[in-house]
Image (cartoon, rainbow, N blue to C red; front, top):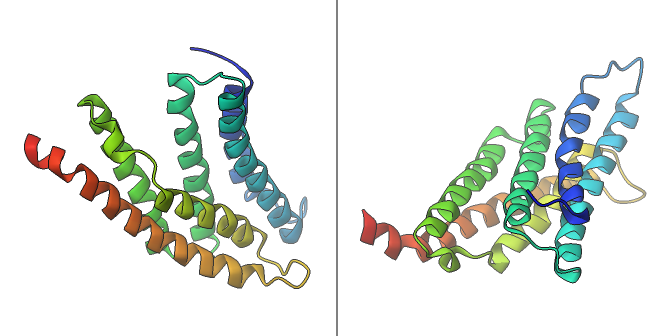
Length: 189
């Protein structure tokens, strides 16, 4: 297993998941709800930035590896899933939206793994729809974690709209990937 700075950033993102979840188990007498929400949103933003940074550094420093390519999306999916489950528990995200987003992530991850196994991974390579979906999620989730107005920005509203946009893009991108993979699926069924 290779170890370099970009992979260390990915492991840091995974290590932040228990911190994010643990914040919501701290008694209100130790940390106010507003402070907890602010720390949780900041932790998610740091994780999102490390997601971008680890990939950029790996490419720039020529430190890409098969292990890093495997671990990075796993870390992303774990962080997003943990945040969505917290938001469902807090009543800030509808369960259906969380199920759609998490279900798509599992489905497309399995599809990509299978397509790689049969040598057809280029059919389900990351597409801009997936990137737009990720961008909408990465802005929506910290807004919904923060939950308070930020200066003049109504984070509840912005986060609520963007998470619905992310769910729509989630379904759209899943259909796109499944359509691209369909000839291989049908040929091997």
